[in-house]
Image (cartoon, rainbow, N blue to C red):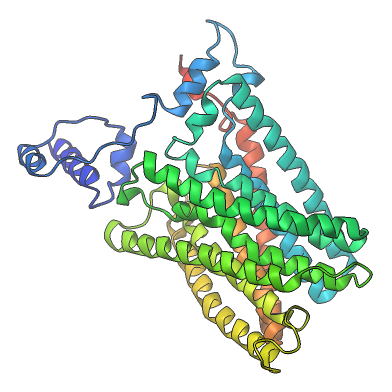
Length: 450
């Protein structure tokens, strides 16, 4: 009797979205229990929220299973596993490219050759992973007709589509870091053109993805996590991209100069747009925490995404500010002190937002405290890469501020964080391989049950 009452209460608050249903409610797997009389009377006064619906009532997983459904007695093949590949796999390339960026930031500080070579290894490995993901996702769309359009309407997968744009941004940044200084002016010119292409793509992809989500999906407040920020993430890589491109041009005096002022100003404009969008969504996330408690176990890694917006903004703005002497003309806005003022403002703003990023980092780490106990486990998903990628922003922001204020303490802190981050990357990657081997990833469980 008590269980029935608990289930009834869980359903009422879940439908209204005023409270997060408990973990036991989701584990029970109840889909349509009977509503109470009081709740039915309430529904007569207030229409029930319309559930999200796409062009098909089936889930994306069921659509894939039906498309690749084998004959009776046939084993699940490699093609069936490829059909399970989703956009979330591009979070792996985001994280790997971010680690290569962190290693280059450390190399800028200590100029150690071994750090340079490790960074190049991560960069090249990330290129291989990115190509592999592109091939696998294309094969899935070919083998499962209609799955491409359906992925834009799936409530979970659609949020991660911008991951391919962010992965591209990390590759372009790594190319400026490791490629431009080692090649001729042709690569620099290509990166300058690709910068403007990326600006256009990031703005269109971000606005377009949010418009699609707002037109086709309904996200109840009790499901809210910082993953909602993801469609705005492409905008957050523009300032780091611009700072890296300008630094690469300055490091190669033999190359022709680029339009540094236009690149910097455009990057700051787009970066500010991305940060403000992310900031408003993170404000909604704090409201959700105050009224709904922490996210469920499977959603908990997404809390770390809240670190990224302020972290990337600090890394980009501070780096551009420290290069203002090669960006700003000698007499800018009629003042000979423009360079000094801009460097000071960028450092102050960077310290301000860096504190916000550290605060979100502490909250994110604290949300994992319960998993220290052996009886509590967190199921592996590709969103575990959120443990890595947003934190690369915090590390690069810390190192950028260390260079700006000349703080040895911040520099050492950034290096320690980078070492821990690489260990986390190795652990997540090893866990991913183990889950692939144990048929916990890229495995059509619905076919297996049939």
